[in-house]
Amino acid sequence: MSEWIPVEGLRIAIDGPSGSGKGTIATMVGKALGLVVMDTGLLYRFLGWRVNDLGIDLNDEPAVVAAVDSAVAEMDWRAEGIFFENRDCTPLLRGEDVGAYASKVAAISAIRKQLLELQRKIAASGCVMDGRDIGTVVLPDAEAKFFLTASHRERARRRWVQLQQSDAEVTLDQIVDDLKARDARDSGRDCSPLERAKDAIEIDSTTMRIDEVVDRILAVLERRRLIS
Image 1 (spheres, rainbow, N blue to C red):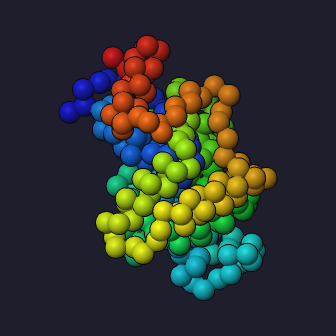
Image 2 (image 1 turned 180 degrees about the vertical axis):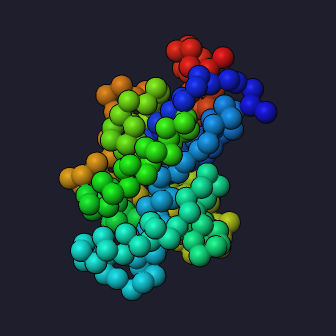
């Protein structure tokens, strides 16, 4: 049972770059409020993984778009992850290589437009949704918007800690370089670039604990009378 009661249909948008902690924070906020949490980054990771698994060149936009059409029809996107061919494929989507595939797929405007209604339909009854363009494009009228950030070094350290659990052989410097390249792609794309919505509250979590970030978000929601 959640400790807070959100207003009916409350939609909370949490955006930020890779490694900013938005996924973890969204999960904790959703748990505190009893709201479904939808990770849009995982959706793009699945599509990138599927297209690459089919042997399609990620630079061949027409072929990628065609593959995504069938992938979306075959997948089952749930709060607990993404299921494909009757199995949970979420654990396969967390690697750095899949993150790079996702970033390329997400830069294709036709794909982002195709997924827009799917995301909005899921959010309609209330949820916490995290990604890179939730507050600006997917849910521009969300009742609450937050933009999480942190230094490149801190974001890389967090990612490195995660990868150590899977015995991945990657250095901290390699992750820093990868994050910088991914930030450049996400912020520089023509369609739905990574940016803070004008009415989003920015939280720099570089020196903050996870629970401190969650408490700040909940305090804002309470002050706005969106939860009680």
